[in-house]
Image 1 (cartoon, one colour):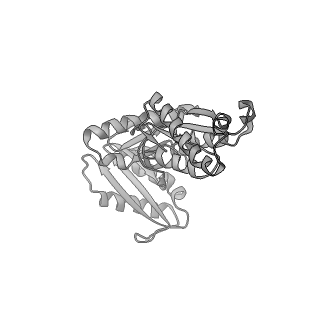
Image 2 (cartoon, rainbow, N blue to C red; image 1 turned 120 degrees about the vertical axis):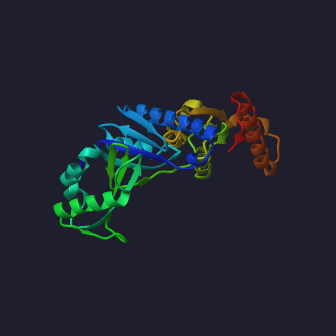
Image 3 (cartoon, one colour; image 1 turned 90 degrees about the vertical axis):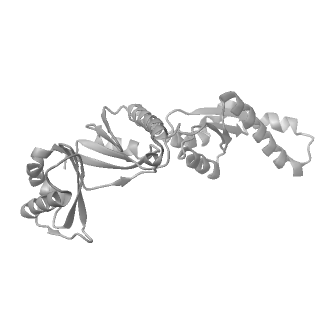
Length: 279
């Protein structure tokens, strides 16, 4: 089945006040464009209330990118057609929509039409039955065919791909993340990013020469986190300086002193970049 458009839905943003919603929509739109452009995907975006429609020839690649954009609730690759061509389109793709499976059709309409959603669902269901070896099951179907009618445009799809939701990165204030090579700091960073906060990262490295960090796994962690935030700013700090400054400190105090050092380091850098929080 040849999809030609992706329907993008956002969730939590829609609950905000009109002023805040418009601000967050603008940030989300910018993040979508940057993420797709970063992967060299050609696209056009059509914007409607509560929906974005992405036209592209690179459907699969776009789906993988969009799944990592915070603020998007779900996406659906669609077949886009016009209302006056809907019957013939459903007839042509019936066998591809369902193959010896039970199905149901759900219709959602926006705009003024001379038919109800239920009437349209019955009509389209009859066409599918006539052109495929399938049967209707409205309670527990093997496949649901969604038909979204928006004025004279129609979008047909069979999948709703859930994304991470949350708020678009940039909707909240910047924070500083103390990033180690373990699992806790990357996970906490990811969770804060999902609430809309762009992050600057600080890593204290134990090696004496910065060039020795070339094979450090921290770069792999940053590479993964970078898929969820379009631009990454990273700060390296050598542990060596702390080691020299604390050379006369008893060992039992060094860990707590090192944590204090990290907090002060992050605070100083946070002031430089106008950060609002520490992760």
